[in-house]
Length: 178
Image (cartoon, rainbow, N blue to C red; front, side, top):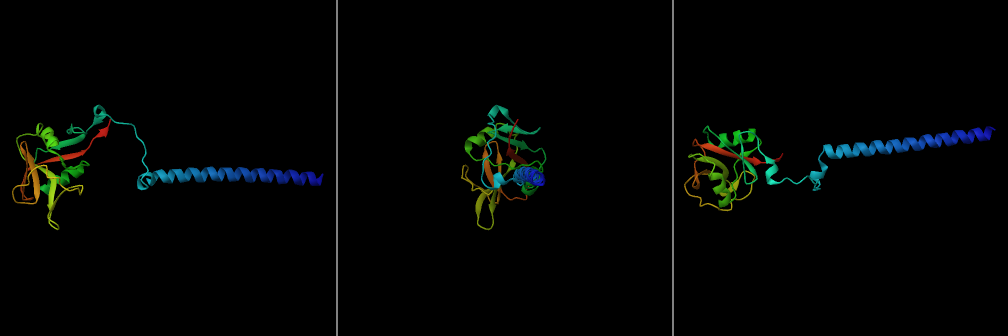
C-alpha cells in the first residue's frame, strides 16, 4: 500500500510539473509576441505586415487639406519664411511640399491661389546639392533659376530665392486609408 501511495504522489507531482511547464511556455510565448509588437520588430527587421489595400477613393486627408496625387496638400493663408513654413507643416505631421514631377505640379497648380508658396526643396550649403526635405535628390523637373537656397512655386512653375523672404507655404503629407 505504501508503495502504491508513493507512486500516486509521484504521478500527481509529474502532472503538476507538466502543467507548470505548459503554463510557463504559454506565458513566455505571449510575452514574447507582445514585446515583439510593442517594440515594432516587424518594421525594424524588414518584415512587411500586409495591410488592406487602399484604393484612391478610400484615401482621406485631414480637414483643410486637399487630396491630390495620393498625397494631402495644404496651402497656408499666412506668410512666413521658409523655416517658419516648415515648422508649421511639421505641426500637422507634414513637411513643406515635395512635388516630384511636372505632371504633379500641374495637378497642384490647378488648386493654388495666385500667390507664391514655399516648397520643401532646398540647396544644402555643405555640398551645393538641391534636396527635398526627406533627403532625396531633386530630379530637375523645373529649371532652377534665381539666386538663393530655397525653392517656391506658383501656378506657372518653380523658382528659387533667399530663404528669409516671406511667402505663403505649401505643405504635403501622406494620405490615410479611410
